[in-house]
Image (tube, rainbow, N blue to C red; front, side, top):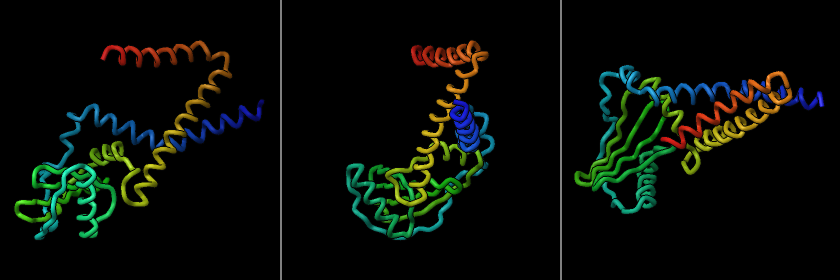
Length: 198
């Protein structure tokens, strides 16, 4: 039994250290989301998109999200651009957003003018943290995008194991059970109250 307790203590300790940078990312970015009005001043004064290049281009814009996404993928491939992207059609305009952590970029096709334009804009550390929080991976192109999604899944599983080992270790310390029940009950109650009233 002592060897099991030691194993779980070590697992809890080292999982906590492994999760530390990811916990910080999600905790800090959540503060930015929750208190965005206090961090808007950190954005550059001029956040206008600047043109990287513009060229004549013609493509038939389809209807339906799958067809629009496939057209966007073809456009990006023809321009030598790769990685995760989102596509949105508005009338004769197709906007393709490439959610790079450090450098936001978009490609816009204007169906009326038959023009294709790539743009970028300044970014800040606050926005980088927010993109880290929002980034998804599976279903997107690129090996590193898949790695990001896999590591996020690993983070989720590791967090569950970390919580389970913490509960086990708390239960083994009889002297702390009363305070532990109080803390656990407070956490559960706060969730139930908010879910039931909001």
